[in-house]
Amino acid sequence: MSDEQAPVTSAASLVPLFAAVSADALNSLQRELVERSYPGPAWVSGAPGTGKTTVALHRASHLASRLPAVTGGYGGSPPREIAAGGYGGSSPREIADDRPVLLATFSKQLAADLRDRLLELAGPGVARRVDVVNVDALAWRVARAAEPGVTRNWLGEAQALDMWRSLLAEIAGAGGAQAGWDPQFLQEEWTRVVLGYAITSRLDYLRVRRAGRPRRLNRSERASLWELFAEYSQRLAAANLWTFRQLTAHAARLEMARAARAGARYAHVVVDEAQELSPTQWMLVRALAAPGPDDLFLVADLGQPPHGIPVSLSSLGIDIEGRSTRLTVSYRPEPQRM
Ligand SMILES: Nc1ncnc2c1ncn2[C@@H]1O[C@H](COP(=O)(O)OP(=O)(O)O)[C@@H](O)[C@H]1O
Ligand SMILES: [Mg+2]
Image (cartoon, rainbow, N blue to C red; front, side):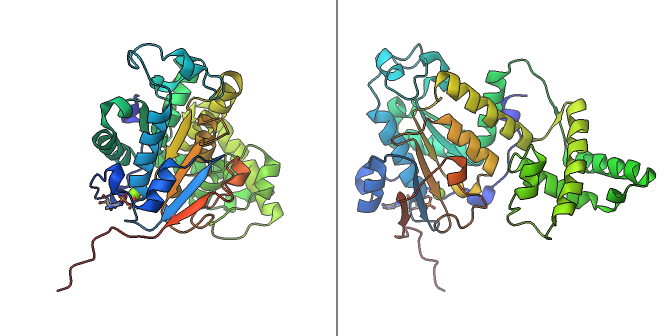
């Protein structure tokens, strides 16, 4: 399986109707966001049509063009000053595709759109220094780079449900009380909560907030569920069956270990449509840039955080306190009145 075949979430409704806006056409707030130096992660929000993607593109271009000039292009090894320039002490070879800036988004389709727009707005010299990619493909790349040659079987939704049913049937056969759980509920709880928050211990499951999940669960219900989850994940592991969420959580752990050893992969990370990211995807994003000035620039629809984000960013090492800005001028054409 290659990047191209990695499962992605379709988000056709998110594809913007975009017209390139040159740097001189940015409004004063947009320009300030693009050019400002931040001591840590920054967050930009606004309704659709307020120019958030425009800002994300100009920001990525600004960061890429500010890094030390490249002689001889990025085909070979990047020059010493980039490697020594202090983004976590990474060696040149370990910088993904020799591109020091990451522009990440949610879907493959949006990434393709960003790539085209960036080229149009920044030109090939700057655009080639920005890695534009969707987060699922990033998870895939990270895992493949860290564990070359490792193969995985992919668990489909129908197969996942079948495995729950057969586990419950076995429990029922043995007279177990846990047989009464609904397989669909188990599947969703396991996917959204256990995998979604990368929970690996009983204690963490007993404590997790389960944001947005239906039905309250008391402590003994959670304890009973955890036994099922533990058994289920053992069965998956035995069959080398993986879901994309598991791969993302795994990639995040691999990347954190790699970053601790060799420094972060990118000098700067910009994320568009950040409201779509799940906690495990945030963990991966966090690991891709070393904490420090201008490390993460996060652009999201919807209101100020934490609205729309069922996750505490600060608990994932992303503290945006005092660095959150809302765009309010809309460039979306008014609907035609009949
Ligand atoms: N400063 C600006 N001046 C004129 N048009 C703009 C400006 N900023 C954004 N636009 C236009 O507004 C539309 C929406 O911009 P976009 O960046 O996609 O917004 P968002 O990501 O917030 O939905 C695009 O057609 C874009 O070209
Ligand atoms: Mg947008």
